[in-house]
Length: 314
Ligand code: APR
Image (tube, rainbow, N blue to C red):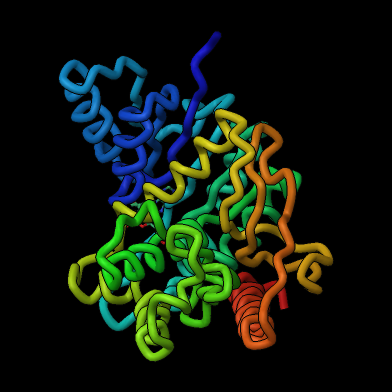
């Protein structure tokens, strides 16, 4: 059976970490693409040289030429700029919209069958743009946000209770911005609703920290944004697709009536398998969560309008 091919568009902090994880997890052959000469080639060579120690023998190629991604099964897009302290994800809109348009045009011609996972921020607008420019079916264009935000929520709940992160299940839905929605009513620890274990004021604080978790890392790093956790999240989505896992994961998917929303990308639980986004799972939210989800979706719509202005569409 031929190996799967994973194209990583953007060989920066997340791109390099994605390549490392893809090799360690034996997902397939990896092609790292970037516009900076030498950067993807250098990272690819460094990773190849770790192969004998780690025991992976996949091909890892670094390139500045799009024809090398031809026939990719999965494309994970991190091309663009990351935030610096004091910036919101939305501040990246202008520059990253142009980058993602360029990337989408190349994916369309060189990797027309790929399952595309967008990571570049502001995520909800960038995944909308990717879908529009490629014209790929909605099942094959998805945004990475919810897996990461949910992992952050799970991490903070586990720290609070001193339990394993594996015992905590949680979902963060809506847009990948400051108004994302940690869904408390579905957060459980060993099957027990979190509200029975953590008092409401502490849960408020944990949810606030979850919403600001990306910013917390940016403020500490000062030179860029988080990369280990976004890469881990995107790899989990790629694995679900490549191994037809039919895993339910919170991802930014195109809503066409689900949750009462039409024509907007937002974070919802989806089933990922060989068919890509095979199903959108509709869960019942509390009144408060429904309102918060609505506000978050409104923010995504505003962001997409702002993007259209930047791109000269309005
Ligand atoms: N085509 C391909 N790659 C590009 C392009 C382009 N048109 N423009 C920029 N890049 C590359 C840069 O050269 C850089 O190597 O994208 C890479 C981005 O890497 P980093 O700056 O290290 O950013 P990273 O931390 O990986 O984050 C990437 O993901 O989570 C989001 O907010 C984050 O938007 C940011 C993106």
